[in-house]
Length: 204
Image (cartoon, rainbow, N blue to C red; front, side):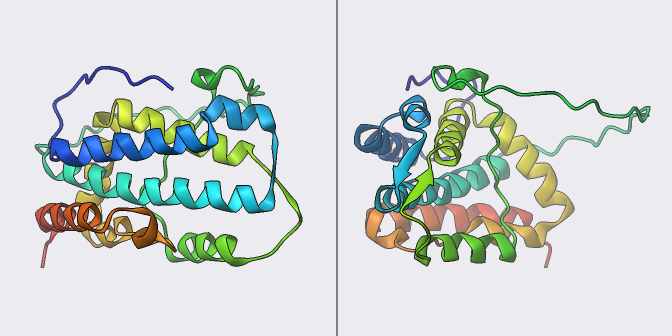
């Protein structure tokens, strides 16, 4: 996993971005990169749950960083463009384990209550002995891409939060074992900086 040079200045404290990079590198050192997970295809359930926990914690930390980045962006006027509605053609997407740069991935910032409950249930239930590694590989690749260039994701998040400011609370996800896997002092720094950023979108 390579880290691209920054293409935009970052608003969040560099200490937090460096901490997140170290956390991401720890995941890669323990479980391998996205291509390694994809190549394995299937994991034992115990290993899948452990990998899922680390990735879920990383996603929670990244949501806080994106909130800070979004709050620092200057609002831009909404462009009204006339779009011609054309039927979307379905395309067959192929995923090759050794080409994660070609994968179609997305990072979900705003989790609704149903998705948060599903996230908790997936960490507690006891299904079959084996589980697919592909979903974990896609999520890890998404974390990598957002870290390398958070500006576009932050800009999209800022537009959504200005439309629905109450959705900012969805960014403060607290997955199970968050406090155990993330350093308490660092987690407190994430929360304080994100809470200050959330005030930008407070309309009360």
